[in-house]
Each structure stands twice: as C-alpha cells, then as structure tokens.
Length: 359
Image (cartoon, rainbow, N blue to C red):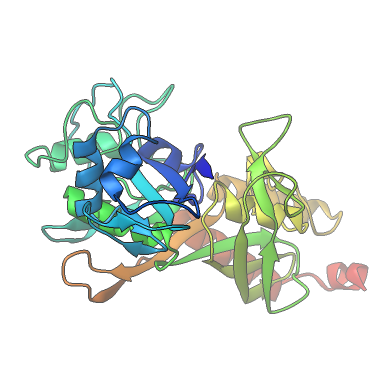
C-alpha cells in the first residue's frame, strides 16, 4: 500500500496550507512478505524525483519515521512496517528582495526567533504581494544565514497566520531547527492559544468544535466545515469563554489541529463568526437590537478593528537544540484591545429599553 498526502496543516489562518508550500508527506506500508532492505533503498524505488542522498539526508534530520519512530538510513525495513517521510519542497523561482522593515522580535537565539506579527502584514510573497512581506523583512534581518537565500520564498517558516491576523510566529534559523520545529507542529506537540471576539453569546463556558475543514466547493478562497469523512481534513478547536460582552463573547481558542482558517470556519459553522471577519460573514451585524444607536456603535467598532478579531497570543514548544519546553506570550494589539474595551463599556452602560427588548 502506497499513499502520498499533505502533512497536517501547519497554518491556521493563511490562504494556503503552509505544509503544502513547504513539505511533502509520503506514507508507505511494507508488504507482509517484505524481505529486510535498507530503508534508503526501499524508498528510492518508490519516491519519484528523490535521490538516495536526499533520502539519507532526510533520515539524518529525523524526517523518516518507521511506526512513528525516527530511523537512520541503514534501518532495515520489515514486513508491515509503516514508513512516513517529510521532505522539503524545492525552492520556487521567486526572487526575495531583502527589505529593512521593522519587526517586533520577542525572542531570538542561534536556532530561531519569535515574531509578534502586526495585523495587516502578509507573511510571505504570493500573487499580488511580492514585497513588504514578513519574508522580505526576514531576508534583510537574517541575510547572512545559509538558510536564507533570494530564491526561497519561505525560508525558515514553520507555520503561518493570515495577513489580517496578529500574533506569535516562530521562524527557524537553521535547517535542523526547521525540521525539529516542523515535526512538533506535525505531531501536534506544540501548544497554540488564540484570542478571538465572536458574535453572539455561546451557550457553554467551554466547548469543542469538530468537523472536517476543506475548501468551499464554490469559493476556493474560503474554507467550509463538512461532516466527518465527507470532504476536507479532520479539525478540532477547543474554546473557553473569557468574557461575555452582551452580543459578543471574548474566547480563548486552543488548537488540537491546525487547518487553514480553522478557527474562523469552525466558529462560523456553529453560528458565531468572528467579529468583522468579512470572508466568513462577521462583518454584518449578526446579533443585537434594531436601535439606531446600537447600529452606529457596531459600525464604529468595525472601523476601530478593520479585520477579523483574531490574535495568536501564545506559542509553546520544545527548544530544537536543548529540548527544554519554552512558551511565548504576546499582548493583544491596540486595535483589538480597544475593540474589546468598547464592548465592555457598551455592555456596562446598555440602555434599559435595549435590555427590555431582549426579554
């Protein structure tokens, strides 16, 4: 049995699965009658356009697993072994121009750096965004490192968040760090927490949203949630209500998986889209009253935070060199913090007639 499939999505919020841009995932199951054979020889006959040297390098970097355990290139494949392989895609022919763009660097050492990305910054070059991206800024900041070159549009990227989502990102500075960090995302051992403001009053203080996330069948720019096994990929989002602010809730989201637009698609699927999320229906007044003053208040809130109210607040993982667990936190940016405070003030000063209308 042989299968080729994309990795578990490293990207929560971008336009494309980050893993589809960076990595290739192969899965093979050895036949019951398989004779002992070095794994590099076993794989070179089954993976097109992959040399034995490339396979050996992948094994040395911990990218080849047998029955979920990393092996070296001299491992002998046995009957019914399950082999998984993670390989970097070749760089695309897009020249990356280093640009001296300010970065909010939370932490940096020889292996990686942590960026607190501002809302509105595109992570990497793509159609319509060939400059002014985070990668252009990184190319300038890290231009003397071997990992960063002008023809690799995704140097060091382990995961991504969308242009209009703010928050924590980890950037690898070496190939070894990129591999080890990437595998933690793949194996779901990294910890990611987000803050989101969603429309409506959630029924429970805590909950879990499940449902396969895949491209909308009519509009491939957005994602949709499908019944299990029908389409898309398995996705799980845990949430906890932090504040109930009348017609909106502030929630903490903990990701068990990391599919494209997972948080946004999941909350839309349960009738609570993210506040001002134009692609998922959150830029309409979804909850509230018919009072003109309320409508004006919401419109002003849209102007205060002209994006989906979503922030990648914390990220935890094992250090790729020391193995020590480390965690990083970030402050909610000004636009979203101001938005939340506006809702607090509005809720505490809500007119009596509006409360009567709800009853």
